[in-house]
Length: 232
Image (cartoon, rainbow, N blue to C red; front, side, top):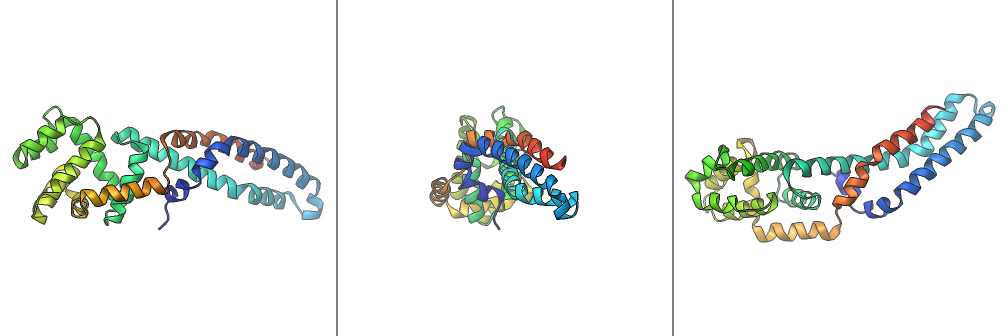
């Protein structure tokens, strides 16, 4: 399955640099095309046909750019919610998918983990309570982490050291929620393999934080563009 993120990762750098001029060009072309079509509606038959022609000319580009905008919005919002960087989100999602953990489950797990880590630093919450029994040493280490990704790497490495799959599932449930025990599969994959997968994703291309911000700002421009031919 090809996600919007996958589609955006490769071309977004070029799109990010050219998008403003592209949008302005599309708007100008749509106006010019609308004028030309309006003058030839007798040939086309009626104005509805004219609107369809304008929509077909602009729609493909607008839909693609809308996909970029949606990707930027989603990545930025998830970064704000979890404390993971935009780049790290994409790299970890890829590593999770390669480990048979769906993006949906990864997202839900990381949201819970981020909340748990924040509370655990104050010695509260279910993550802290669970680790006080399972591994007080790990809890102490997590309290000294500086960001979510660092804590995530340490936690998965700790799960990796547990020899019993049942213990890994228990540890995954403590950190990521009882419904997200498949996150133990990341520990089965192993820290080194996960690091290689993340590096592979970065090497193939990801949306940067700056590009995500720019993509997220496209919504207003897109609405203006669509209003040009919707009003024809």
